[in-house]
Image (cartoon, rainbow, N blue to C red; front, side, top):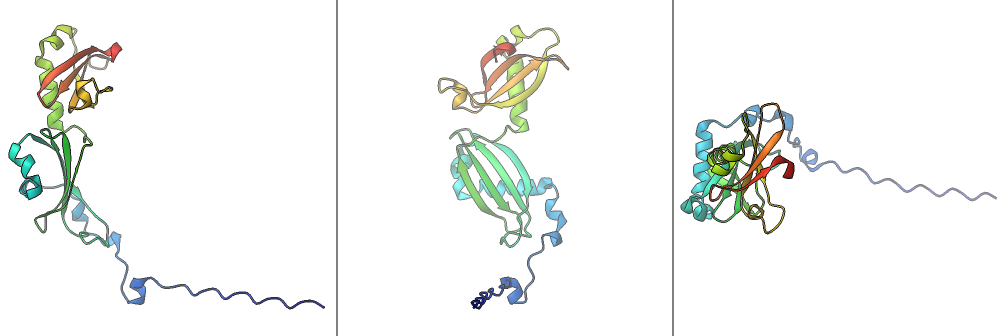
Length: 207
């Protein structure tokens, strides 16, 4: 005699999302204001920097004044974050005096620093730092002596020393590449951005 088949367990009913149960619609990213993605205006950049440097947590950096603004760019967050829909700016500053970076989110609508984080990680070089490093390398006597006819600055890159004995291991530095237009790099000058001096001049083949 065949045994009767066991009844299959009933599947639990699917629970509707909270917003659906309460009659609310989920936040729609597609409906976000496209102007939030627009580049910051000069006025917004100035406001973001003023708001950040006036924050009490930035007192030491702003007072000493040995810092460089790396970038000021628009920042957009998705709902349901409480800052969704606000005009925001991300500001990154490198503090030369304490060898650290400050990464901040400034709420331009509220005029407040919504987030601020300090770290030992080094951000990319700013364009000002690239230009400064290049100008320092160009006037250094050791660099000028080794440049061949037609050699010009090709690029300036963020550089970390490979060993602890290398000054650039602990200090913010740039490597300025020299060579002929359309050719290979022939010479590299390492620039200490804190003291604004050339710390090493290295032939490209030894780099």
